[in-house]
Image (cartoon, rainbow, N blue to C red; front, side, top):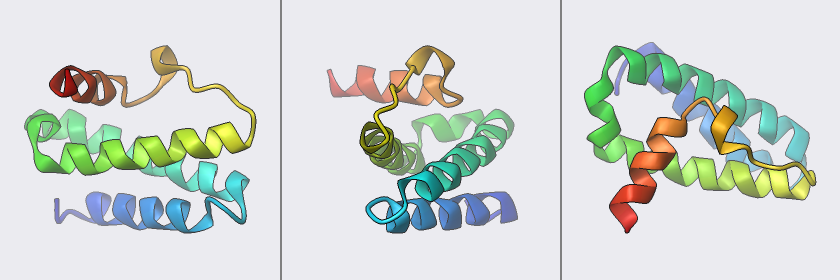
Length: 94
């Protein structure tokens, strides 16, 4: 959680969320880079998928999906880099 990679990913999430309304293209880019960084983190520390941190990331995935909606672009879960996290989150909600 306190690694440079995690701190940078959180910064990118914040930037994406801040830009979502005014510049959805930039927001999309920030979110996608943050997701790439989280993929590295989760591959290195798979137990974090069960951690509270994973739920925070899931909230940013929802924000990303809203950005895609603004851009009239679909969200393809089958190709999403954090698909496992989304599926785990969806299973825990049911």
